[in-house]
Length: 103
Image (cartoon, rainbow, N blue to C red; front, side, top):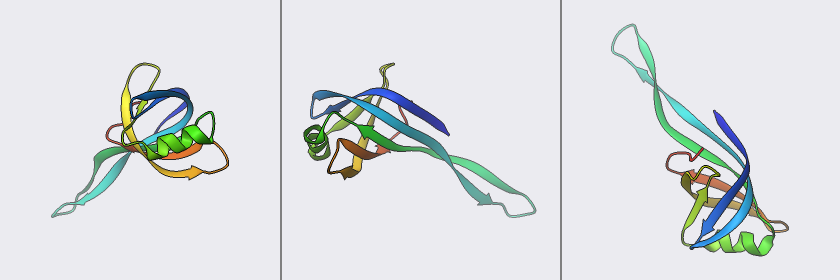
């Protein structure tokens, strides 16, 4: 499992917003039973999720309703995500990554 905590840039419908991120990624292990005495574990696709903290509730609302959302890491790598939950009293978003983790 990989972990990233730190600054990121969120691009929502073409507008950039600074954010703090707490992200995790992992690779699922799938069990494959063989025809015979041996069994195997095979690596599956990588998944990632986490939390984003933005400056205020208004920015969180814009990100939640954006048609396109991208997360850019400090090294330039980019990943797409969807917002799964939001805190209505703060600028906190819970996200699910789409595709390979950018960290």
